[in-house]
Image (cartoon, rainbow, N blue to C red; front, side, top):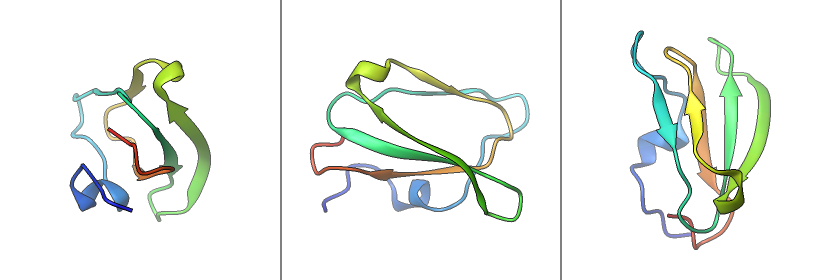
Length: 72
């Protein structure tokens, strides 16, 4: 599967305190995993173009991965 985003997003990462993120899928779909501090998946959901923009809270641990090749 060809990725169109940095591989760092496939690993556990977060935003800085005070920094909100906005996640928008332009095509395809991705899996969004919310993680504990230890890296355990606490919830997971599929986000696609019909989901609309998603907000990631400051400091929230997460990772994403493509569900299909068309992800942008």
